[in-house]
Image (cartoon, rainbow, N blue to C red; front, side, top):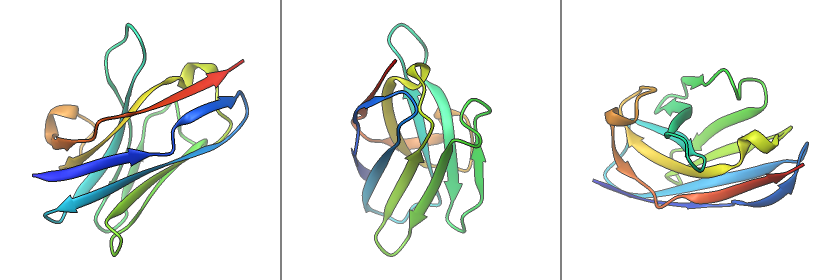
Length: 118
């Protein structure tokens, strides 16, 4: 198991930027990812990054979001730019396999709220 703590969420106007961080403790992680869940909707994949920085993005965020990680600090980041109101959700970081499916991740953070106002 890995303990994950997200930070960096908040309220931002449409077109603005935010950077989320996810600090990990415990065993080393191969892949880490971001998922999000908007009110009344199912959790959805956002982005994932492997230990050696292979990345995959959901089509809805490609070109606007950038996932990265600092293995020495055991921290993952999600730089979000050109934010849209539809990006409003609770964002969760997760650790597990290199996958876009939530079921392939065995450790989850508590979530951080991102709200984008129009």
